Length: 106
Image 1 (tube, rainbow, N blue to C red):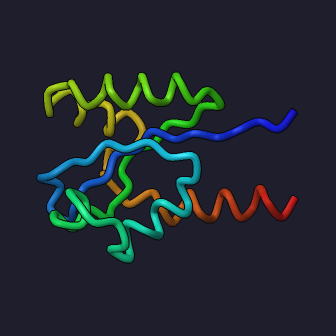
Image 2 (image 1 turned 180 degrees about the horizontal axis):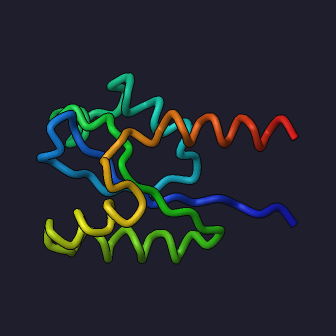
């Protein structure tokens, strides 16, 4: 049986003053869509192209629940979550794409 992958992720802009929380089954594709401005809506309007946090699961219901949970949090709590994984608020998308490419080549 094939295992599916789901990601809950947080994007921000270059200034770090706006956040977007999303969920996808293909984070690599989704990041390319965000970076190229292919997705109309909130993330495009505020130029949210910097991946600062993500979580991985194989359970779609868990991913949806987690996305909804994080969306309800106050900004301070979201900031704290980002800083557990990424204290410098670097763009993690390049690291993620490299990691995925490496895993596929094995």
